[in-house]
Length: 469
Image (cartoon, rainbow, N blue to C red):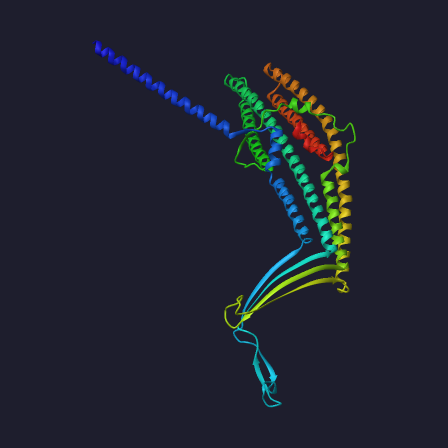
């Protein structure tokens, strides 16, 4: 009896141990899974997104590759001003030797007759080293200046690429935040509608509500769930677009921290107190000026074709010939030669080709100058429009905030009246719809402000200030 009691106790302890072990394993797996999910998701602030884009955006990376290309272009042009040295070597096997026709009397023959005499050797080789140095060539000197200007153009183009990607990332980042706020509005509305559906269902069961009223509430619930699904898809698409602009794999998970509307409102600083517009601070304008300088060098390079050029040349040749394949030995005929040349080239007439190219270059410069005027006006317009949009958005934010507060009061009052039988279900659903509309309008006004704010900052040439906020 005592042994049976011990066995029972042992089995109970064993079962307890197994249960504890299973719970421990389950808990450990849960913790590891939670940790791996947390590690796979990256908390992404606006500054993080902007910095990531500067380092990983394909457009920015390609612009940086162009800068490296500019370095090699400078080296390529500079090489034209340095001595050019070439070495060549040829080996010839005269399978059929060349023959010369000579008067026969030279070889002891009859006057008036001719004979064929073979000339040359079976094997011959020539080794040669040539040097050429430009002493004066206006095209080379102009090309060197143009290459340096090309690198400056690439540097400025890289800044334009960075500013454009920063604007895209920042605008899309706020778009995600506002869409999530709209999702929160729908969630709150769904919760209110669920409570209303329970109330109407209870009233219907005791005969205080009609079936049509219950059906209307259910239809409203279905519509809200459909809207929520659409917003969830919109958030996912906007996050994918954000990752695309950043140069991040779209399959990577990100977590954008919660940002309250009050925080967005707090950043509505007065950016238009002073006129900070200056074309010479805008990369999109400066890159056109760099392009204008490049076209100027292109025109000068064509003008340089009218200038004479002077070059120094030198060569050394070593020739060896033999009927046997014993070249470069004492048994072969070996001799060398060398020369130094000074070449002056004077362009005289080319049929008007240089003149036509020069006129085309002048027209290209004139076209670009028109583009610069158009761009200057467009940049000024963007700045002025951004200021107008800022003012409109600030006014709209204030108006929509008041509308939101009023809609909340109307809804609460209507809900209270409905509960007391003083308002119809139609009145309550209408008040609820107006509340959601007012909340979404307020959110959209905030988004419009943030986008206008980003445009204004960019039009002032300070888009990188967003990184330091």
